[in-house]
Length: 327
Image (cartoon, rainbow, N blue to C red; front, side):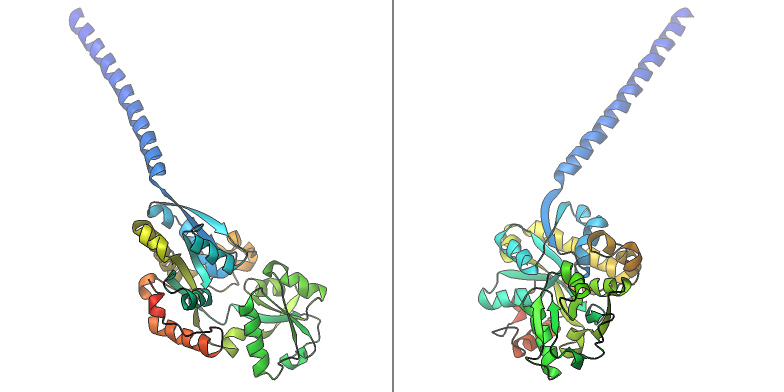
């Protein structure tokens, strides 16, 4: 009987030891698996700018869509779109996501065909841009701008939008246009260094919320050029796509998921504005959300229509066949 009890006791001890061993092995395996998973994520560099139109980049990161595709995405902010696109071309960025204005890849296509590919688009509605003036400026209509100064965001595109507006209002040559970094535009208006500023959201809402400015012209782009144009894009270089086809497809997949999320969850997507733009939590509820188009939903006819208009208005020095630009 004692012998049987001894055998049972030894068996219990062995089972306990085995259980402990299995427990630690399981934990170690989980740890190792976690390490392998982390190591398996492929590093990619994604460029964006800190304004609303780059929302797909931030949503893809914050909602884990890059990770779902096996990517460890590093989001890198840029002060100008030109610098961002240059980084894509020279290989310092793998993609620019969400808000690259379509004019830049179109211009590049006229000079070096096939260098870039567009893999998403966004529709710029009339909710995103405005010409604002100081709240006590006394400027009540656009004709009051004669002899005054407008601040536009940097780059020839913003200046061209203003010149189109002024030309159609009979004010060509009667208003000075200066260029100011977006981070300083509201300060320029508040200080009186400019009488009006041409800005994109969230700066429109920010100026109103702070009691600094009011809207004089709602959407100069939509009212004087084209309403609901397909202005925002995501871009990759053709070289990157050719050299890394699987990685390129993973980036496209992640951005497509982000676009699906944004288009069906405006309120949730809007909550990310305060995390990567100057908008705070209180302001973001007032801000618009762009409609985006996945890589497989881009309307090439509408993109061509825009390209033709940009050429007619001399934004482009040559006409562009957009089929070569679309992925």
